[in-house]
Length: 483
Image (cartoon, rainbow, N blue to C red; front, side, top):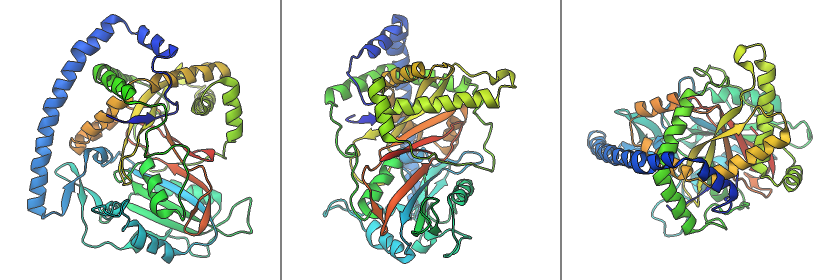
C-alpha cells in the first residue's frame, strides 16, 4: 500500500514485547479461523459485491452524463463516505483562526479568486487543484454526487457573519455561543457547501488594546479532511510557508517497505475478523455518553492551551507518549463526569473501560488537493482505574499495541468500499455501531504564521458528530488545545 498511518503513538519496533504478548494472547483456533475461514469468505464477498457495485457506478455515471449533460458526477468513494447526513446534524467541519490586525474582506475574496482557484502545485500541472470548492455536494438516485452549478459568486462564501456588523465587538463567550449555533445550522445545498465567515472586531480578554479579527471556516466533510485543509492553508491561504514537525508529503523516518508489506498482509489475513469484532462491540456497547439522536442544540468549547513543556516533562519521567498523557487526562475527566453526573443511576457506576475511535491519517499525502485520506480505528482505554499513573501506563501500552496492528490499513480499505455504496446503506452503517468518543490529532504547524495580513494567535477545530460517534478533537499548534 505504501502508506504509514499517524496516530497517537509513533510506530515502535516491529516485534516489541507488547506486540508479542498481544499476538500470543490469541489462541491458535482464533488465528486459524481468521486466516483460513473468515478472511477468504470476506474477500470473496468483497470482490463479488465490489465488482457489482463498481459496474453499477459506471452505468449510473454514464446515465448521469447522458440525462443531465455532465451537470452531475459521482463523488469518489473516499469522499462519498461523508456525503450522507445524520439525523439532527449536518456533516460540516468548523474551524477558526484568530488574527491580529483588521480584516480586509475584499482582499480575502481576491485571495480566493486570484490564488486559491488558480493554484497549481507544479507549473505544468494539467489543472488547478482547488476548483473542487466550486462544486456542490448533492445526490442522485441515492448516490452522492458532485453538482457543477452554472453560477459561482465568491461573495456568497466569503462574507461577514450574519447579524454581526463591522463595528460590533465579539468576545470569546459570544464566539463560542455563535459556533454552537453554526454547527447546528445546515448549509444551502443550492451552492457549494463551504463558507469563510469574518468577525471583523474580536476582543481578547488579555489584550483589549490591539485589534483582532476571526475567520470561521465551515466546510462539508466530503470536500476535505483536516490534513488536506492544513495543506490548503500552507499552499494558498497563509502569507508564508508553514513549518511542520513531520513532513506530510514524505515517508516518515523509521518506516520501510518491509513494514508496510507486513502490516498489509496482516490486515488482509486478520483484518476482517478484527473488523467484525469491533463492529459487534460497537453494536453492543451501552455507553451513557451515547444519544438516541442529536438534538437541535449543540455545545462547543475549547480548553486553555496545555503547556507543551509540562507534557514533555511528564513524558521524560513516565516514558509514555504525549498522546497517551493527553488521553489519560481525558479519560480522567470522563471518569469524574460519570461519578458526578450518573451516581444516582443504577448504571451510573464508572465503566471498566471506554472505547474510542482513533483517527489515523494515511501518510504521505501524494499531492496537495482537497481529499479525505484517513481511517478510524477502535481502541479501548481503561477508565475505572483510580490510579492516574497506572491508567497512564495501561493507556500507553494499549496505544503502542494498536498502532503496530494492521487494522488501520484494513479500515482504510473498508471506508472506501463503503463509499461505493448508496447513501441509505452508509446511513445504516453509521447508525448501527460507533464509539462514545473520537480522538483526532491533526499535525499542525509549529511556527508562528500569518494569514490575510495578521499573525494567527489561536485556532481550533470542531468535527461534526456523525451517527453514534461522540467527538473530541485535539489540534496541535505549538501548544495543545482540546476542542
